[in-house]
Image 1 (cartoon, rainbow, N blue to C red):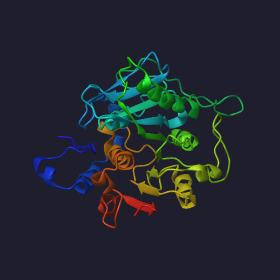
Image 2 (image 1 turned 30 degrees about the vertical axis):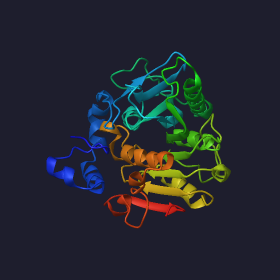
Image 3 (image 1 turned 180 degrees about the vertical axis):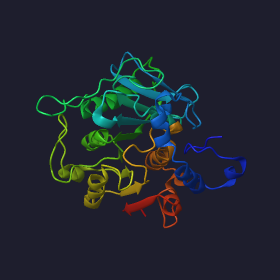
Image 4 (image 1 turned 90 degrees about the vertical axis):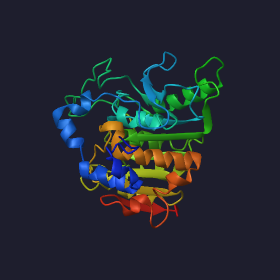
Length: 321
């Protein structure tokens, strides 16, 4: 049986705390083996482990986006919305599909720019970004404007009579997140007054003040525009974004901020079943920040918080407790 953190739990382990489940996930560390064998790419996309089994779809009314949502909208609770920036700012809206469908199954509409370019349901081949003659990579395939388009669409569908999402969205429960380059897109969109929280995965603004990624403009001054609580999730010292993300966290002083780390490197646990441990942490953060869920808050709050006691995880907090 899989718990919300993607851990295969034996019957006796079901009696353990969520913290124990997280510890087991660390011991398993299935990511590298799956990627090496190609299992991650071909892994079937399940419905997620949350109360609302979910699906991955594309809608004609939102071109070049991939949507993750509960399959039975009639039975779901009022849905939060998470808009997502893809790793590499790519146009593969399925690149983090295991992670995103897990979040959706807990009562969210999750929207990523691009098309389904990976996994068993791929409809279009993702072309690698090759350097030009000067050695520069081409501009990013998606921008923060594309991420924002997902939020605009969800709110418009909530208001449109005849839409499957009409009246289904909790318009106060809106968040933005992203991985790597997509995490920078999340920071670009963070000042939007509709956003209630931000999640930055394996990312951070460049410490030397440069903008080496063509098509995206970021700087440390962006951090002063944060107006909501923010969660940084890093993969430990071996994460290429470690210097940038930890420096961001040190500089943030106006809003509540949390930095959690699991030593799995830059790839996180996105390509493990149900998004692995990181998906569980993201769900807890969203449920706490957008729903006021006190049980979810226990992953982060107090000196004895779940992530405070699980071996392998580290947590730093500002204005949280």
